[in-house]
Amino acid sequence: MTKGPLTLANFGPLSNIPPLKELKILALTHKELDLESLGKFHIEESAENERLTNIKAFFGMDELVYLATCNRVEIIFTCPEYFCLGRIRALFEVLTGDSKLAGLATTRVRTFEGEAAAEHLMRVAASLDSMIIGEREIITQVRKAFEKCRDMGLTGDMLRLLMRKVIETAKTIYDQTDIARKPVSVVSLAWHRFLAKRVPHDARIVMVGAGQVMTNFGRFLAKTPYKNIVVANRSIENAERLAKMLKAKPMDLESLNTFKEGFDVMITCTGAGRHIIDRPLYTTLLAGENCKKTVIDLALPQDLDPALTAEFDIDFTGMVQLKTIADENIGVRARETERCEAIIAQALSEFEAILKERKVELAMRQIPALIKEIRQTAIGQVFSDDLNALDDEARATLEKVMDYMEKKYIGLPMKMAKALLLDQVSKN
Image (tube, rainbow, N blue to C red; front, side, top):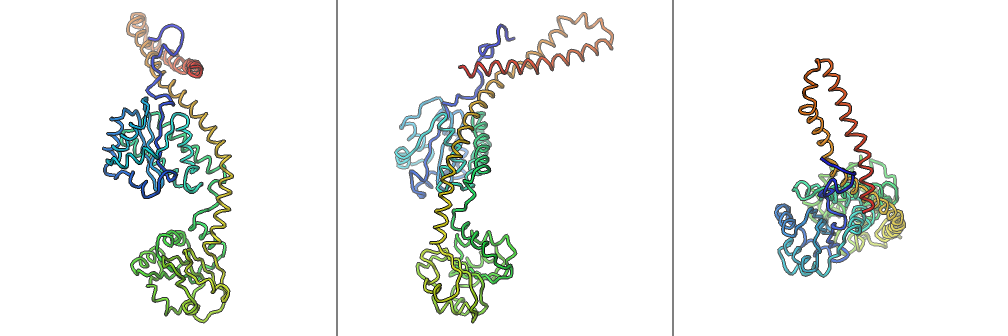
């Protein structure tokens, strides 16, 4: 049993949670490498469990999370050992199985330790370290990376508590600042422009192109009542794929030369590298109509011949206009970073307090067991003869009193002891 004044020494090691200074992050991002090179540091999903388990054991890590997205690969771990360049190179060689890639990583990697590592992870989840500030996808990617490694048995209390605070902080930033409220992606901006036109739901929409940009735009369009849609593409297979998602009519690009149904809105983005919608084709698409048409052109160079906007009544939106809006919105997001930094600073302070409290909680887990041990000794040994002399009613009353006292001795004194130990932790 614990004897003497209540001090940290009575409880031995506080817990198996490593100190914050043992938290480390090795980061390779779009800031250090091109996206193609970053992809070479991704682990095949089928090999993740074995590879990461080996890394954790070989390098003496207590906990490990592997985060891989299209623009970053980060190794988040706790370890008491210092990671010199040699150990970093060895780690990346185990990760990739390629000595040249390991050498490249060693020259480009950013390293973070302790509070700086926790701050970096909060900035990552809040998109402050992303290619596009304010993109929300990263918060989900961070959470899923942790959950996957947790399910592999690679994590513990430190990273569990850290990830909980990281996700909570990112959500606070998204909710309380304008960091993500101004769209900056081409597709999002184009969709907002489309909505601003207040196009009637029975409008005739012609989509030219069926690549990734048009598919992403189509995902927005598919959630609306618009059904009078035609999808034209050089590859009829891709046109059919996008048309199926939109419940639209597919056709090959050449068929536009004989298209007689007219249109109200045209959305276009092909990889033609030239103005494919020239005067003859545009005149054909008009089908004899002379009212204003809406054209959203997401191609570079644009698909619509620029001369047509002067000759015909066209409400035109192209990449030049969208880039201007994107730059303005990026500026708004950038100005919000100061507010984000303040939220992160507060979160870091709270996280350190959470760690201290958790360490004390783990250290004090033995107290309820000690109280129960005292009770059992009293009943079974010290006062056994006296208890046997009591009638059933008196014994039942005594049991109730002991139950009440046990709860109080586990409850109120635990709170007092916890406050005392937390004070001692803060001073150490």
